[in-house]
Amino acid sequence: MRKNRIIEIIFAAAIIVLFAALLKADRGFYAEIFDEPGYLGSVTVFDKGGNAVYKWYSANGFIVSADVSCNGKHLAVACEENGRGKVHIFRLDSTSEAGLFDSDEIVVSVSFLGNKLCALTEHGAYMLSDKGNVRKRVKFHGILGDYEFSDGVLNVEVRSHMSGGVIKEMSFD
View 1 (cartoon, rainbow, N blue to C red):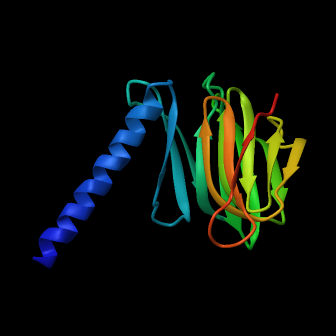
View 2 (view 1 turned 180 degrees about the horizontal axis):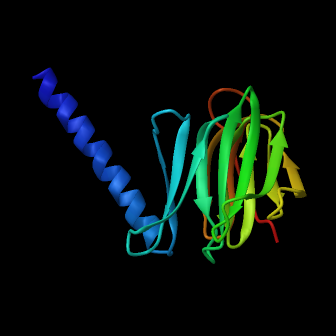
C-alpha cells in the first residue's frame, strides 16, 4: 500500500514538472535545472521545440532558480553561494558570463518580467540590468510569504506574523 502511494506521488510530481515545462515552452525558450555529477547543478535552456540550446554548470553554488528572457537572448540563474545570493546572467550567444548580481541576502527566485530581470529575496525585490546592476529596489517590511511572477508583474504576500498577510503587487515600469 505504501509503495503505491510513493509511486502516485512520484507520478504526480512528474506531471507537474511536465506541465510547468509545457507552460514555459509556450512563450519560447525555457530553462530547466538538473542535478549534475561533479557539479552543484546545471541549467539547460531549451527552445520551443524542446531542443537543448545552452547549458551552464554550477561549480560554486546551489542553483535556486533560473529563467530565460522573453526575447530568448538572456539566461539568469540564481544561486546560493557560501550564504550569499548571486544571480549569474548570460547571453545565450556566448559562453562567458555577461553580468553578476551579488547580495548578502539569499535570492529566492529570479524571473524576467517582460524583458526586465527581477531578483526576489526574503527582504525585497530588485530590478536588475543585463549586467547585474541594481536599477530599482523595493524593500519588504515583514516576512515574505508566497509570491508569483505573472504577466509582467510580481505579486508577493508580506506577513507581519507567521499566518495571514497582505498581498502587494509590484510592477517594475
